[in-house]
Structure formats: structure tokens, C-alpha cells
Amino acid sequence: MKIYGDYHTHSEFSRDASKEATVDAIVRAAKEVGLHEIAITDHGHAAFSGVRTKHFPQIKALVEKAEREHGIKVFFGTEANVTGSDGSIDLAEENRRDMDIVLCGFHPGAKSKNLKQFFTFVIPNYIWMFLRFIPRGRKAKNTEIMKRVIEKNDIDIWVHPNSYYKVNVVEVAKTCAERGTLLELNGKRISFRPIDFERALAVGAKFVISSDAHDPKHVGRTERAEEFLKYCDYKDGDIVNLHGPFRRGQANLLASIEAKHDEEEASVAPSGDRAWKKQKAKEKKAAKEESKKAKKEAKEQRKREKVINRKSD
Image 1 (cartoon, rainbow, N blue to C red):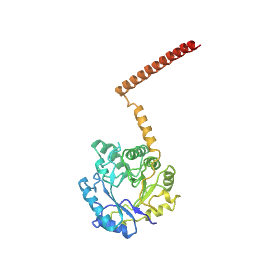
Image 2 (cartoon, one colour):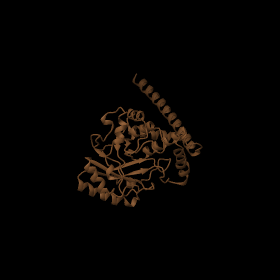
Image 3 (tube, rainbow, N blue to C red):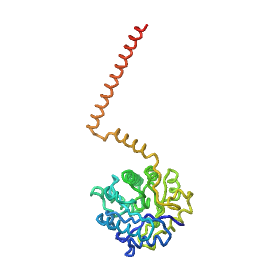
Image 4 (cartoon, rainbow, N blue to C red):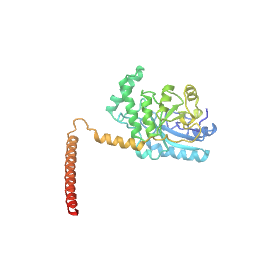
């Protein structure tokens, strides 16, 4: 199976990549296997193998240099980590603006944003991952967390869905479809079923095939995705990098969804919030007074019209 571009690779800046995985070597390998585009997406700093943000300018300079020398499109990006149940990731907005592409997913061992998140988010998932069993409640929580991540952040690709921390793939896929985030068919692991793939397509999600290469010799590899797709029903357009350049999934009714979310957020009271209740009572009273005023003006207007009609008679 031939892909147009590979959008998930790691250079030597990721500490779990091979020493041969220089940015230049990754890009050279991409050109040799016939790719037209390649992305360098080293691990975010919260991962044990992650890149410190101070190295981002250096990586970006190497990406630009390799693009000039090898004549193929090279994206500068990162594979971010989820750091909290509130949807936090280890990528600051100012760094996001400098990147061409951002991947994100759950990663065991990634540092949480604070101690509370470590005990309420990381440790429970570690335990169930070790036991190879996931309670329904934990899976539901993970699903909501991943949806929150995609809603709050500008994520291009959700990487290795359902690996490590288990989720309802189709539910997250709905949010991906709404936000224009692609789901990945990972070159190392595909942790969901063909039926989940087809159901994700049915709710409007799109996919991308990536190698997750940590060595130049693995760039552009698609064997695992190819084997998986033998059991799936799909069209070429469902996998965006089969025949064309990288593009985000089409965001479905995003503006209306965000507007609805804002309305719901404004109308839902936090439990026990006296200030909110007081404000709502004040708004209700003001609306009632406004309604009375409008009725009174309408009544006076009708009286004036009657007087005018009598005079005209």
C-alpha cells in the first residue's frame, strides 16, 4: 500500500528513537521510499523520552534545511501528551503557533500536570492497564477526557486510538469529526476493531496511516494498516493520505456546535453556586419587568390608535 505522506515520525531528539534517526536521515528515507510529504513529530516534554521546548527552534531549523535539500514537503510538529483530566496537554499555545502539525494521545508514563491528576488520572489507568481489564466507569471517564482534549486543543491527529488507556473509540470519533481531527491507523499498533473503524467512518470521521517510525528504515511502513484494512469496508477518501497531500478532516457544523456549547455552559449552574443563582434570579426579575413594560406600552398604543380612529370618523 502506497501513501502520499507519513505524518508520525520521531527523530533523535526523542530519546527513544535510534541514533541514526537524524532529521536529515528521516527526510532522506522518506524521499527514497517515494513519499511526497513527511512530518517530524517528536515526543512532547511530559514524556520520559520527550523533547524540551527549548529544542523546538533547533528542530524547526533542521526541518527547513532538510526540506530545501531533499525537495519534499517536511512538516514540523510534535506528539503531545495528555496531562490532565481537564483536557490539558503538554504544548503551550505559543509553541503550537510555530508548528505545522500536532498529534496527541494517551501515553503511560507521561507526567501529569499536578499531583492530584497523578493520583486520579494516571494511577487508576496504570492499575487497569497492568491488570488488562478496564471497568466501564473508567473507560467512560477516559472517553470524556479524550473528547475534552480534542475540544480544547487544536489537534490534527489523534494517535494510536484506544492504546494504553481504553476509550469508546466511536464516541471520541464523533468529536474528531466535529473538530476536523483525524484518527490514526498506527504502523506499530491498532488497538480497535474493524467494526469500530467502520462506525467511526459512519459518524463522519476520517483516518490517516502513519508509521510512528523511530528509525529511518521504518519510515513509510504500512504493513500493519494494510493487514487491518483487509477486514474493513472503506473508500479511498476515508483515509486522507492514500492519494493526496495532508489535509485536516472536514469540521462538521463546528460553528453551531461551539455556539450550542456556549449556550449550554451559560445555562448550567454549578452545584451550590449562590452567586449564579442570585444572578439568574436578577435576570428573571429584569425579564419579567421588561415584559410588563412591553405589555403596558402595547396597551397605551392601542388606546392611542382608538382615539385617532374616533377623530378620523
